[in-house]
Length: 391
Picture 1 (tube, rainbow, N blue to C red):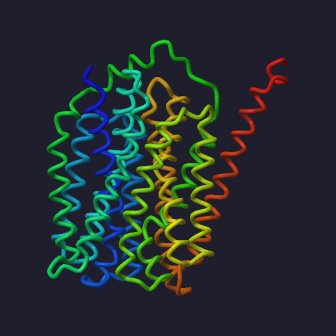
Picture 2 (picture 1 turned 90 degrees about the horizontal axis):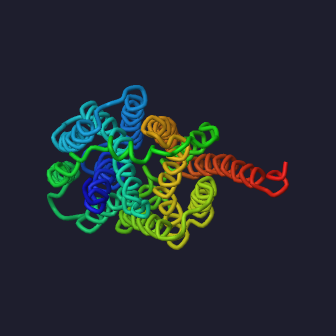
């Protein structure tokens, strides 16, 4: 088997392209599309939602069928690049919707198979500590796209269409760089991990429920953060920087948690992520200042990829032989939450002239997810208590 380090960075690049470009490039470009392409807030909500629908369909495909991993990963990367280029070439909303749908399908396939492929190799090499590098990928993609848009904002002639074309070309170049690394098959790695590994008891539905609720909770700020910042602060020159700040928090939190000893119960990690999302949303709601919004952004960003890391670790615990389909089911639940979030948030924001109600809904979903996660933590402690073991 190949060295796990280059494979880890290839996996990180796959997740960066899947979420940083295929899923969330719309976030920093949405204000520009409103300004130079006449896109309405509701239209932006539907662009986000159709991308989420594609993400859900891609996850369903990965759950229902055992797709060839190498071909799926390579096809997903090509479709992300083509869908991104298409956004710069398409002249109308219907074509934009088609491009975002394609990118969403591809992003889900990359997430499901990219995580399964890379973590299988890491576990086979006994290098699970490198998972944090893998899961930092989405944050790296968010930082790269968000910081570039923020830094070069306002340059004459650099409109939203040219940004889409530039990121499409960058996606194609990144695809070429990781193409050969993705040829390493995960089947032998999975077989070596499965040897001597017994399935641990435990239901999957609480994990799916927590992950789906978190999907709804995070997608509202993740889609509309620059607009929320502009609405609360009335500082257009500053609003673009909140999205890369979100990405920085994501990367740093993931790497820090990956460097620490692993938690004994993955639900404890999930509960921490839900609490961070809840507090971040509350700060954005009740402390509408630069400091409050910045701290809220950091807390929300710090939760987004650690929650993926803990959920996928729990999936590997529940399905050690091959967690691909369980990862697909989790991605489906996440996708459902994401589909509902953007159009509901956009409609509420337009009707009520602000993002307070959408943020309240997001914090409510995070609260319910936190309660489920804590209930699983309490149950695990009860099962491992001395009195229970004595029985």
